[in-house]
Length: 112
Length: 229
Image (cartoon, rainbow over the protein chains, first blue to last red):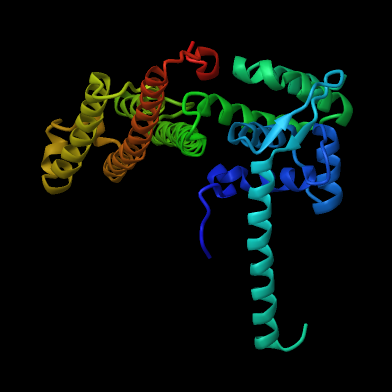
C-alpha cells in the first residue's frame, strides 16, 4: 500500500485519537465536550482531556483542523481541506484492509 | 468541587505557557462539563509530560516524547532498584548483629552506591548537556572503583582463604562473600541501564539544539512556544 507524506502515522501514539477526532469533525464543527461524547457513541472509547487536546494540538499544528471563534470558553474546531484529504486517504486505506481481511477469512474459514 | 477536579486543575497549571494560552479555557470548560475522575488526572499528567518534552522540538514531538518518557521511566525504575538493593544490603549487614539493624562500613558503601549514586546519576542523565559532562566521568569512575574493590575482595577471599584470618579483608570477612560479587554485578547492570538513559538524554538535548538553530534560521524567536525558560 503506497504511503502518503501526510499520513496520520506521523502523529505517533496520537494517530488513533487523531483519527477519531477527524471522523468526529467530518459531519461538522464541534467543541471538545461534543467530540468526546460523539467519539464515545461511535467507537465506545472515552478520550481523556489530555489525550483529546494532545491530538487537537497536533492536528492543529499540521493544519488539518482549525479553530472557530470561541463560544463562551468552549472553542469549536472544524476540518480543513487538507484534513478532509488526509481523512479520506486513511479511510480508503482502512476500507481496503477490511475488504482484504474479510476476503481472506472467507477463503480460509468459509462464509462468516 | 471534588478532589479529582482540583487535581486536574492543578495539573493543568503545570502545562507550558503557550499551550495554556491556547487551550486552557477549553479544557477547563470540558472538565467542568464532564466531571473528571482520577483517570482524567492520570491522562492529564501523561499529556503534561508529553507537552513539556515536545515544546522544544515542535516538528518531532513523537521522538522527543518517546525519549523523554523512556528516560523518566528509566529513572524511576533505577531509583526503585537502588532502594530495593539498598534495603537488601541492610539485613545482610545486620545478620550478625544481636538486635536491630546495624549498617557496617561495607553495607554503607553499598547503600551509598545504590541509593545515592543511582538517583544522582539518573538525574544527571536527564539534565546532561550536549557533549561530554565531567560529572559523568567522576560518578562512573567512583562506581567502577566500587565494583573493582568488591570483585577484588571476593577473588582474594575465595582463592586465598588465609587472607581472611590475617585481617587483610576483615571489613568484609563477616559478609557472605557471594553478596560482594553479586552487588558488583548489580552495580554493572545499573551502569548499563543508566548509560542507555544517558544516550537518550544526549539525543533529547541534540533535538533541542536543532530546534533552536532552526528557529534562528527562520528569523523567529518564539520563546513562548519553546518554553525554554
